[in-house]
Length: 411
Length: 149
Image 1: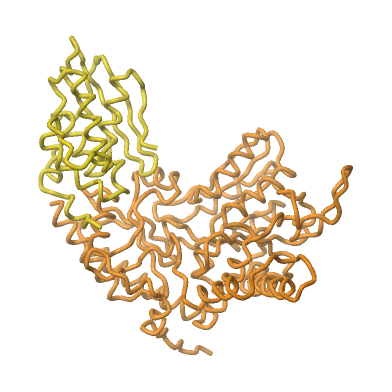
Image 2: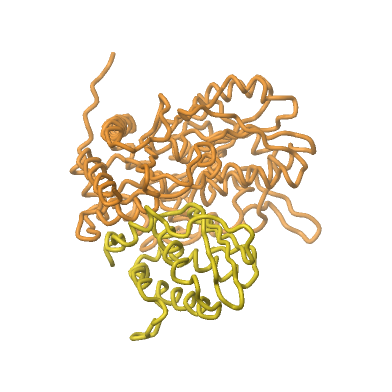
């Protein structure tokens, strides 16, 4: 049975974001940069402030009521993350500083353990630098090589190439779930199945996926799934590494220090079980609790309603931008999240970014930490608009007319 | 906060569209490449310096309008000048766009290059305006590369 989704009450939602009433250069801000960082609703900001005001202490330490309370909130946030991505156990949820740190953790533990001289690490052509550089560093250290799954001009991965690219030497496949530049939603379930058929574990970079899609790591059968809090209406400084428990148990610890130990003597240290052994030192407690509050907030809006709203904005913006002469959208995959990168003939993306800024429109102009993607499409940079659940069609109109004004100026 | 639109004056737009002194001198006496790693702007500068004078200077590369117009106007401004004067101009230009000049300081060498003074209010674009001058400085010093990192 199909039920009709109640649309989001965007007017009410926007009241949760004081930043959206700011004015730049005499124009109300139009925030189309959620792929850079999502805005936090008041509910998240206030939850973190409450922790700092009334509940602040360290976690997993001491017997005080205060310490126990903080630990409970902190671990409850972990449980919220577990449920949010469909993991089997909270022990599979490791807190990190963000997506980048999570990938480095896997590269430096799982990667170091399994990659040897002559081995191969397979990545997709649309990876963010965060899912390239840690593997390149590992490959250099081990004498391994990076191989790349190519993509079409539309920005879709060429899956047929996997049959050849997955070899007996492939030790890991890393793929982005949603491209931060092209918006492509990759068929990660299919990719994982193909990799697993060759015995290759898969790490999925979900940084741009979790704000837009319902993710179920067990259904995907991902070995590792990583994302950041701040793209998900949460704070910066917190991120998540999901790993299958069997992997996490087999992996050595990464950073050493307090919290991650069972016992320490001058001769020998033993470690606590996962996830604790990967969480040395005092964690960003308020940020973890804030991420939990962000997940609650998104749940009250409804992930399916968010997806429907964002899809409407994507379709509307694509159609309007496509009508501008000289404008070309990069990334025209059939399955896309609400991210649109484009270039305009005769205007460098940085100039366009500055001119849009003059109209109050906040977008990203640059290489988006994905220089190989820029090289693939032979552009130095792009302008990127990304849409969230609090954006409106009227804001798309402001973007379109600001682009038209810039074109007029550069004529 | 300055309106970014104010920076895009006709002279800058016009030099972006039709850059002067665009190309490469072969042979040349001085050469350097400039990179702006943040945004990928790149610029190649070739010069012929004789008897302490900048006889010829050409640039090529790709970048934003601020970068291209700055290179176009710079090459026109330093051509025929003594090397020491070109260096002094580079110094004054950097000071101007970084907002580091003393209040009321004179920049007699810059002439119409003061068009770029508005850049100082747009910190994210300062590097674009400075790149050609940083590359010129590197070339005159005999360094192969300049970066605004």
